[in-house]
Image 1 (tube, rainbow, N blue to C red):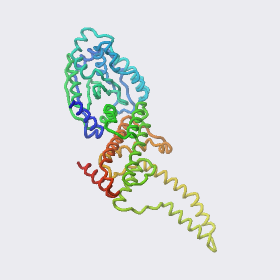
Image 2 (cartoon, rainbow, N blue to C red):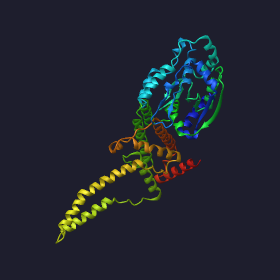
Image 3 (cartoon, rainbow, N blue to C red):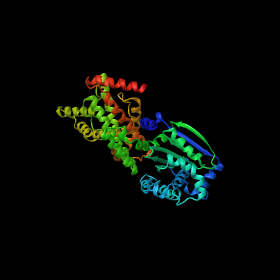
Image 4 (cartoon, one colour):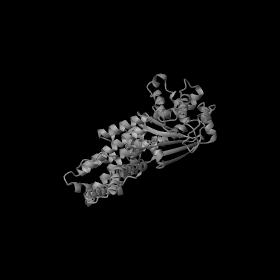
Length: 460
């Protein structure tokens, strides 16, 4: 029971701040003879591994190779389970998971490869000979206790990496394989890595060296594990706002369909709704309908005005120009000797050139909003500000306004995970922050207390 409680705590802390929590990594390097022994044991010695290599045009590192050893090992160990009991196990690769891959934004050459890879590598053997059974019997004992109900699926855009989950065992980890036979396991708990090591140690004639460490970088590794960790935690266990849960559900649904742009749009809308709630709760005023970056700037500006006093608003240069030109035209019309040519020139500028300048200014402002870094908002703690700094540019990249100005750039699975992480960090902070607000004091005092409270949180 204590282990399960600690496991849930580790998952929740990871969702709140992946880089602070980190993940455990176990790198297993079999010696060359053991690589041969392992492939022979799993009937892979004659497999033309080269046919599974492919080169992604976006990958500067050249060729990549899929994870083959681990799914093959799992399929062989599952064959120990009797046919009758095997019916109660989830499929190692469910048929719908293959169709799910079609929608992951994987290029066509990857999908063709993936379909062949799934069928040829992970198909469970109909029967194992006596020698194979003896060789795998010790490993099956470990497998049965820890990995029997696991389901495998490739990580989107990372075909050499697998997500391995078990709802029954509340287990989640990632496995990465390279062309040298090296296997790396990433897990939120060290115990999971040690169990996997124990599984390989139970195989005959396999000798390997290990390196175990805690990983806090690169961020891409942490983000690749974020959505599966969220699914294992079950969002409603940590979040109670129904609109937030609805946004997360929609996001995960869009990700399953490979619609990463739509997923980030859903996240952006959800974040804007939360910022509007923060705005109206603290400022007792209706927030404007505006994009996320504009909302944050307005929130910060209004809070600073409450704390330091209102600042004089900057007048629009075009407004000053229109007023000046209007005054000149009126004065010329009233003049005893009006300069008709000059009046006509002023009217031409006022009616033709000034609107064009205003339209250009609006377009430039929209573009600046896209590329500008979001300002630090003093009412948020530092980790929330960092998350919003990550989210705003992604939200801008997929906005409908950018579609009008040009075309929205594509976004990746990892960027979608980053956006979702940023949204959940904001939602978790606001869920706790609402409990701390002193509604009995005035607006200015409540804002001051919030700034002080979150500044202390940032420093601890």
